[in-house]
Amino acid sequence: MRRAVVLLIILLGSACTRETPQPPPPAPPKKAAVETRDGGRLVRRLEGDVKSLNYLMQSTEDERQVLSLIYDPLIDLDQNLNPIPGVAARWEVLDSGKTYVLHLDPRANFSDGTPVRASDVVFTLSKIFDAQSIQFGPWFEGLDRERTKAIDERTVRVVFTEAHAGRVHSFNISVLPEHVYANENLTKTTKVVGTGPYVFKRRERDRSIVLERRENYWREKPAITSVLFRLIADNNVAWQAMQRGDIDVARIDNDTWARVKDDPAVQQKVEFHTVWQLGYHGIVWNLSDPLLGDARVRRALAMSFDRQTVIDKLYHGQARAVTGPFTHDQRENNPQAVGIDFNPTAASALLASAGWRDSDADGVLDRDGKPFALTLLIVAGSTTSRGQAQVFQDALGRIGVKLEIKPLDEAAFYDLVLQRNYQSALVAWVNEPDPDPSDLFHSKGLVDGMNVTGYKSEEADQLMDRAARELDPARRVEIYHQLHDVLARDQPYLWMLQVAEKWAVNRRVQNVRVAKGYGLFHWYPDSHAWWLRK
Image (cartoon, rainbow, N blue to C red):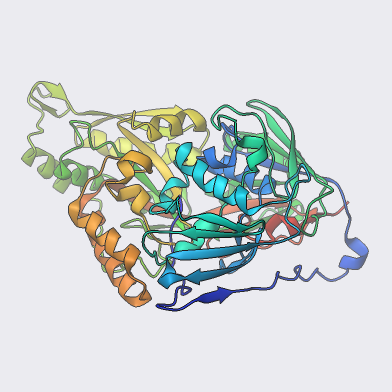
């Protein structure tokens, strides 16, 4: 998911030009002149299979991991998550933030050798709507398609009907070549032509994807020749592969990290990186379900989730409770928002007030002759997801609620969630550096966004609309604090945790750096600057 921090780039009533020089390559470690090696294959773990290799059709983090090497964005982010040039060498913000003029880098080209043209940008923006891109559609809400034009071959004017405080981050997207995709169905096409440093070479479905460095890349070429993504859904299997040296980079669960982090043999082979991502775990409720439409029931369920036990036992203290869609690292997070403490007794009383009682003394609450039974979807292979679900299941069982835990592979899981064909699901959303959560919670997201719960609140809609128009950062933060209170009260999600991710990297991989809030990937130069020691 996108959205998270305020950017001070829109100036009222004046033209504002941003011409940031290309960042220099990161300073190499000592002895780099002796140790640096060009070439080699990096092996990275995928936690779920990739459903689409079309940039606009992506919907999962695993797809993003692969596609970020095939495509470079129009506007990139540096290690501090500030906007820097990408395919767009510079940009101007005009008309009090309603108009963006992007000047494309004359070097930028696609992997088939053709230059990136302004017409390709216009084509891409059109396809976001025509192909109903669920990931990017909300970013360009209010786009004036008639007035969005190519000024010349390398300059494009993008016009919106109204300003948005964090709009610049909408351009952290890549460009599709019109000459390749103009007549393609983006949901079915197998063509993969991008602007990034690697090209798609081959895949074995449900097993692996291979990318190779392209020699005609327009920016500084990465040192690593090829990248193999291996699908390993199970965390234990992934860690065993990491120990054997079969994979170089993998996210591992906190239980594994706590068990092995002080082992000298492990420390010799593997370096661990801690990342507090701008994201959170939560249980999404399908509010159209008869059981879950009542806010009292959702609140009672939240009272049955023992966060502290999960933090201590499953994450070894490497997690912290959240009360809404903003993390502790973000100004938009309201520290005064009232969370819901673990209180099974109060939960039972609240469910009784909603008509749920154990009328037949079978240990399960019922109403109108129907038992209170829930199905919770989780992503298979994640021991922490299963662990959280089991803690929840045990607590609910003690107050008379039956919870069935249903593991699914990642692609099937997100298919059901995005189609709202589920009852409850344990999700992990990652925010990006614009805090607007409209695509998750605004009623307009029911049609073309990621509002997978069916949540509708006029009060929340008005707050999100006000925040989007508010160009003063301090006032915008105040509005988001109010929104945080509303979402904490209404509980469209059971707000759970922000988890410190643990990434394991083989020590043969050099020059690995971490961006606060993002981690190892999705900023420049991230893995572009890595090299492999023989």
